[in-house]
Amino acid sequence: KPVRIGVNWGSLDQELLTHLMDENARSAEPKDAREVMHEAIVQSALLSAQRAEALGLSADKIVISAKVSAVQDLINVYAMLSRRCSYALHLGLTEAGMGSKGIVASTAAMSVLLQHGIGDTIRVSLTPEPGGDRTLEVKVAQEILQTMGLRSFVPIVAACPGCGRTTSTVFQELARDVETMIRERMPEWRRNYPGVETLNLAVMGCIVNGPGESKHADVGISLPGTGEQPAAPVFIDGKKVLTLRGPNIAAEFKQIVEDYIARRFGPLAQKPEKIRVSE
Image 1 (cartoon, rainbow, N blue to C red):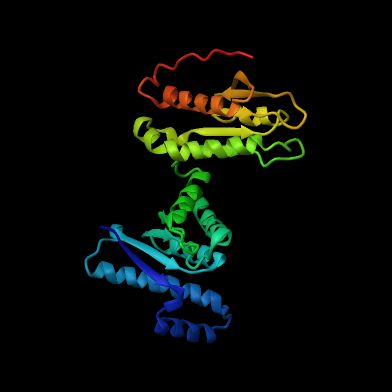
Image 2 (cartoon, rainbow, N blue to C red):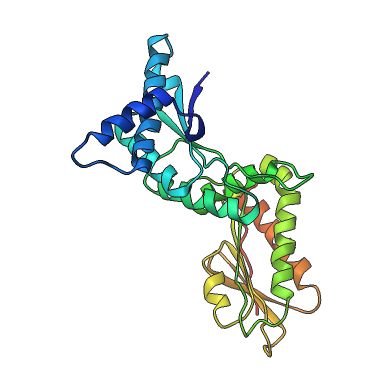
């Protein structure tokens, strides 16, 4: 099995750090203390990996983890590691914090590295709320990979942020309902419909920009905004296929999504059913 070899900036090898600090002090162009710390982390990780190889562990079983708690430190350390070794790299910001602060910090650091092809595995470390669990860490890690287009775990729901044309909360409620449906139905969908996690849905709040944005989703709906006619055009695979009206728009749209999933990802997917276009 692979073995993770970790270095933590809070418990660095003091002999190595002191040696590098002394060496830096004698340099004609000394680096700042933070740069020296980065070098110490990298050297410590690589020396540990080399010792593991000397003891018989093959290089392809080694995963290096360098734990730091500042975004720029993580980016710099892993950029250095990627240039100086071919070991697998495990990305993660330690002590990232709670809630949105921890999520934003972890996302900012790892997105930069992943965009440059650096990193083989990732983790998100968040301080849980009192009484909370750690499932949010897994969800955030999955969402980082999915929003960057690297992996797919669940269907994506694109929803507009709202504006002066969307004083109604209908589109917000439908976006929430669709997200809830995905969470509840995903275990069954994953079993019965391979590939369903690549599905893209769109819930838009008005007919000004909504139709154009909905066309780029597999299934999209553009709900009526303030002062607009109570009609919601639905787009499937880039084409307008029908318009929903009345009090049951949410239920009808969710059924359209269910039917689309069965048709596209089910056992008869190779024989798609023709969709009748109506107004």
